[in-house]
Length: 336
Image (cartoon, rainbow, N blue to C red; front, side, top):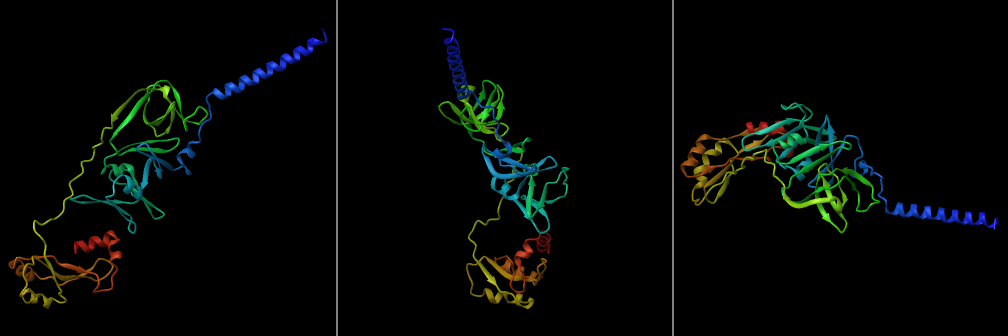
């Protein structure tokens, strides 16, 4: 009997170890992972000055750049998602915005009247400060750090919202073994993007799109986002006539040819606009030659005709793209 005791003890220990191992496996299977997601990888950030763009509860591939505590977006991104009325002069380094009454100029790389740099050029790409774009556009945004990200809203629609019932983890995917993106505290609001059997896909106010258990959500309801209307956009009008335009061109190649208007109009009826070829672009700096004539205008008006003078770009060897691509050259052309 004494010889059997060690054997019994050994067998008991084996069973005990097995039970402990099994229990640990079961515990591990049903326990929540505490592994945390690499957030730079999650947001796709490769550089310290990059900022993720979370637009209308969607993480975009486009990125911003953080300089002096402000976020800048490429002009291409601004055009795509915020405001397509901005124009860049890459040759002379201007960012322009046109209203019905004026053209607003911002010099790239220089501080503006608000004390910050509204735009800068880097490697041939124009970047505009979100704060500057917001002066002329209605949207809301909040910037966060660790890691850098900007949460923007431009759509004011109905959405599902809820509050967090109890402190919980927001996970990368639905499942207790998925990595943790961030923590949500009791009472924190979230936007519910999709609801499944036991998990819901949510967007937090600070830009994380992940999953929480349904049992952690309370007070789920539909809400309308409140529109931002800080900027009162002016009305852009156009010059219109209340009648059909019937236009004829008058090829005027010299000042003396202005006297041929009567001859040209003999036998012509139904025309209400005449366009004499008066202006000739003479170089790529915005200069032009004019052979306009006041007496011609008076005679045309007396005959009931409007005069819309034509500017040609073929009499002299000029490149119209070279002229229009420079702010100073356009100003010279318009100013005469």
